[in-house]
Amino acid sequence: MNNRRSFITGIKSTTLSTKEKKFLQQYKPWGVILFSRNIRSLKQTKKLTDQIRKIFKDKNYPILIDQEGGRVNRLKKIFNADHLTGEFFGKLYLNDKKKFYRYYKIFIRQTSLLLKSIGVNINTLPVLDLRVKGASSIIGDRSFSKDPKIISKIGDICIENFHSNNIGAVIKHIPGHGLAKVDSHKLTPTINKDLKYLIKNDFSTFKKKSSLFAMTAHIIYTNIDKTNTATHSKK
Image 1 (cartoon, one colour):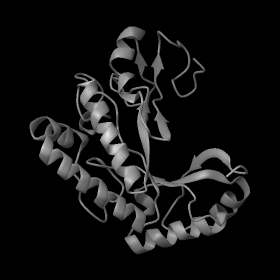
Image 2 (cartoon, one colour; image 1 turned 30 degrees about the horizontal axis):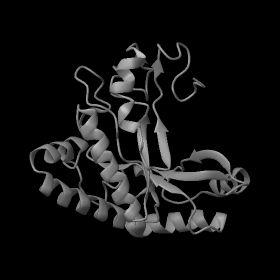
Image 3 (cartoon, helix red, strand yellow; image 1 turned 90 degrees about the vertical axis):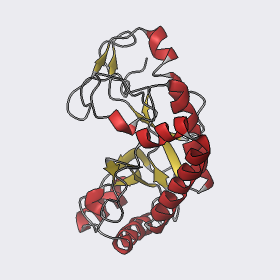
Image 4 (spheres, helix red, strand yellow; image 1 turned 90 degrees about the horizontal axis):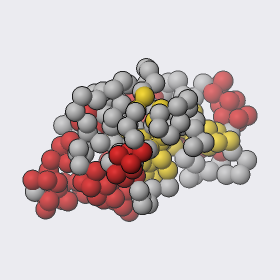
């Protein structure tokens, strides 16, 4: 691991090109992340991840995916998870905890089995952002709740269950994307809330999490750093 560089890269298609093989050999990224464009079938994707790992001679080389369910479903060519949103599980947790625990455990176990069958060992879940009225829809139903305590609790359950299925978890989008009024893939959101509010609400869902990884929020929090996004800010 020590000779690898601290970046994660994507690839263009369903197989590795000669250029991509050379790139991976030369620059040795820490990991590779898969997107829908890379996935045609279980068999093809496993062949692709085997190709990647062969380059690094490492059966545990990090291969990631954004497989949340709902809108963020990279395996959509393989199975339909449209209704299995964060919101769906958050409401189930509120309405029937017994059913929630049963359903959520099955959801994570089946997701983990699918990921292992294609050679993926890290999933970028849970989404720990608050559901905020009037905010950008980029989070929306991906969030478990508007209540930080519920989000934190389901987040712990999510991480624990993925870990017990030997899949790494990635908390996102630290320190909180919920208040953003624009999609940070397209524009830079600016949050003007004071630090006390943020610590009590948006930031609190990320505390004391056993995940080894986190995905940052590309957001400027003006009361902490007026210039740099959370991703780039030393503060």
